[in-house]
Length: 315
Image 1 (cartoon, rainbow, N blue to C red):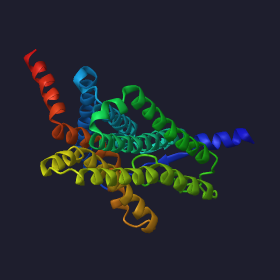
Image 2 (cartoon, one colour; image 1 turned 120 degrees about the horizontal axis):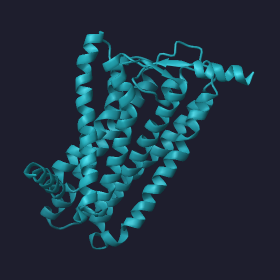
Image 3 (cartoon, rainbow, N blue to C red; image 1 turned 180 degrees about the vertical axis):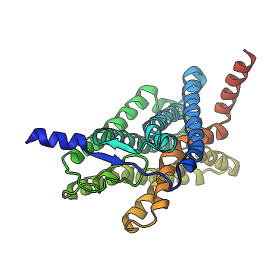
Image 4 (cartoon, rainbow, N blue to C red; image 1 turned 90 degrees about the vertical axis):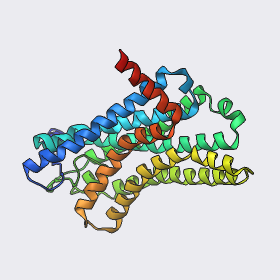
């Protein structure tokens, strides 16, 4: 009997969905996706290279930025095969095991990124509230432990998802609504009762992203309280200016994610094109824009990047 079930599991094939259009239109659509992936991978790789190479950038802010770049690279590499496969080669089929592996890594990197954004909010609070003890509080070993806890928390929350999905029987059309696999999408394809998955999925969202966003909000309340106590108007603006990059990263990460969750919860299957676009934005925008935003706002980082490229041109 188990052999029959194993055969059924192996034979489950899902069909991924992309933007509507003819095969020729998909080839044109693939151009901006390729462009975004190249910029994302190159941009985040350059930040990692610059921070690792330059000792003057071995500060808490840039170490956290490196963590963010690693998670963004992970998200990009995880989604490249299926998204580009659809638009370049019209490859829509994905096996159950490959789908479960992809959704595990997508959710893992998303949850780690949520934790890293929380750590970056804590970093900004310490830098503004207690600048004299900033380097002594956020030491590299302590940052490493914080990063490890973030990874372990995300892994503990996400690890049960593939196993919960694998126990299902899949007897529906199996046409997913995105160009990649996510838990909620695969769960709706099951013909078994998915109440446990639905409750656990909601729990992980609230415990990870919900808790992180609440703590980020409280961090900025304390930052504002500290900044408003500064007598000098110029120093007040300077302190707030150090948070602009992080605020942009928060908007890029949470806005598409919250919008997509709201449409799924209250839209009842409506606005399918908008859901596809928001899904792309939630996975593609942060890796694409985070390196650009931080490079533009951080003069120290921007000068180092320009210097490296100028040396390359001279050589």
